[in-house]
Image 1 (cartoon, rainbow, N blue to C red):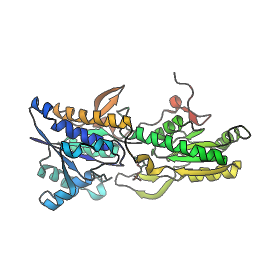
Image 2: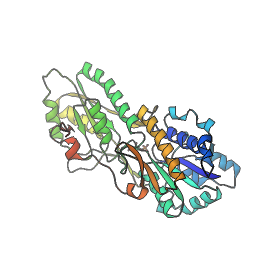
Image 3: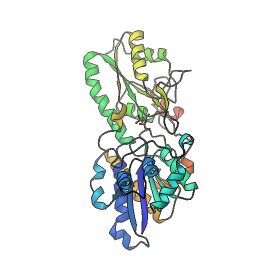
Image 4: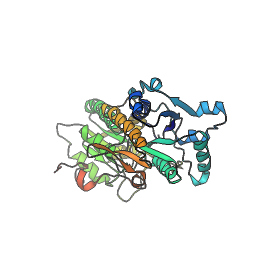
Length: 366
Ligand code: F6P
């Protein structure tokens, strides 16, 4: 009997519960078990790495607080729901200011964990990679609404988030049209513009601002003014939270750093909206979509990918492909070494995808 521990780390999003369900179902599948030389049990860890660091394996109350044994019955309906039923955190056990890796290793041993499946983005997978280097068997599943993980063409949560952006912009259009207003819509995405770009493209936004191409306020206003007097009396401007003016830094909510050293971005939409009003005379409002983009139920694509990623993670355990992340490349599920996924972000290739004149998606593809 081998024990698989599973956890979700970083920002939550739709698709996590599906991945947990399919790791559990596949690992415990009685038909598959007949042909396997090993049997599995699955242990859910609550609140990401935090749960594994803080649990006291000798104390039953603490085990109950931090651990959640999983079986097929328990996870049966999970793929329909957003968020993560295991909870999540941004705890970094290797943060030098609060080193808790020794405790983490001790707990893994005491709990008799044979393999850890970590579902997360670069930060969560970075911890999985460090553990792998210390001799712990780990497998990663990619998750991030930002779409910036390298080594995979898809990460869980992205499609649901793009759908939410599109739906919210559809809603804003009717009120923007009635009032002849500009609406500036701020998306998440950190330093990558994928959410703003794809969300803006599929909703037909007039202007899209991404971190990869610093913009000029004068050019933005010029583009808006080109529409003055035309039949269209409103415009949607989508701006990524990490976008910035030429020569300037990103807008941050505050000075605080999280456990992995990230600052909380946001606030640029309010600035842009104010400037538009002042410089063009257009009436302008802004909306920060914020955590709405991580809420609600998973899209069809996220449910499907969660299922496939979960199944692939168990295949990797059976094949002893440790220290790797499940990936999706050129339409096929495969895997990549965790090492190749870290310390690098997949950013929008401006030459390929962005029109620097129009501040929008490119109108040539081939
Ligand atoms: O990485 C996912 C993400 O949603 C980013 O797009 C965003 O900047 C950040 O997380 C927000 O984090 P929090 O949930 O801690 O506010």
